[in-house]
Image (tube, rainbow, N blue to C red; front, side, top):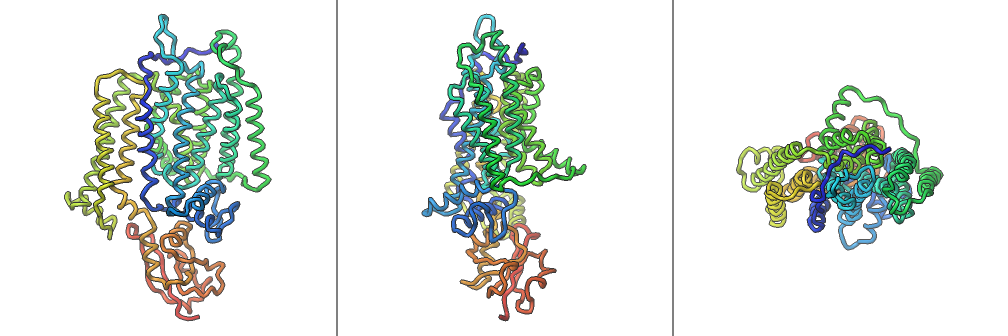
Length: 577
């Protein structure tokens, strides 16, 4: 017997968020960060450098590398996307061309999250209580309202903003995980009229995850989702027979799970045969300090979805094995455990956000009005304060008033010369005006909607991200890009001559090649390349004589990143052949 649902929702509470407003909302979130900026350190510029190498024919397409050094733990698919767009769009800059497919991947993530919540909310166990005299929310309207809320919850997550706007394999994995979760939600929906399309999406997502450097995530996530789907179908049979709830909808084909399992196995067989699936690496247990750091990451990175997720698990505790709870919960657990074991915990935790947003949406039908008001007030104060700080610092950069913020900018970014841009200012002012209008709308008297409590968190995150990517964009480009140091080194070396490098990281190499337009050669593979300049990482200087005959070289300069005195490169000039 199915457990009673805790959701009590009237038809008046499931108004749709206007489609035009939702599309503009998504555009305001997706586009800033992909337009008008340079590649940032470290992963962003490193991945871009690999894509450019592949497009120029300097790297293998099956084994991506940068200046002869293989890319660690990343499949080739994300690099294929960027390289293909560089070759297809030779009339635009390479850094803009590679952002087009990744902007589409972020849009795919948002779309898949919406449809995932929609199909999960169509589950019988997820439906609200039926009233004795009618008036309860209709299933389709209820599912659409929750899907709007799930999309807003995803955009409200603080950790999504920066990492989802980088041209890195992490964004590709995020899109494929959201696609896999969407396929599972469609397979769980008994009213799905095209089950084989769901199976096709499943197979694409699994193969893409494997080719994007996350084979074991694909395996754990896929097996767990299939197990949940299988158990839910077993439990749904007596429910249909007893209540007749779904007798008017086409029954799902039982071989869809079998096809999904076969596609999962086939994808692994093919990729293992091709040597694209490495053995799982065993990680050492976290220390006490690492546990604390990881705990703080969980709190801020997934805010505000995690409190709503916990509320969902409590109020829907009698339906934990039902697909609308179990499917996203399993995806969250896989990503959180992977984050605890990963060297890059924030990038691993990124994969949990679509499932977290889905769980957060199911908290809204059971959320008390006082809790919703508390969320609104906290969001209003927090994001309004953040926006005010961004505006004050921008005004100080332009005018020198107030003096303290202007002095802080001059100290943290020495050499930065701010310039007024009317278009950046206009976009920032327009976004701020929209925020003020939204706050007034939220405080007004009108009918309640399920997604109402997540409008301000999503809008606040979007506002601050858009302000950073407009008002602060020149400052962030100056501080987070390797462009200034690369161009400084390019001015110190002779033109039309190769440059030896020793100990440089992949981001530094990518930046020197793109921003500095330098032809680089590694000391390990150079022999006597006849290069007239040498660029060395400071930590490799002590052992440099083991790889280079220092009697032929003279120290020329130390070039530092203007915003980070701890990061510098040493430049040598050849004095003898």
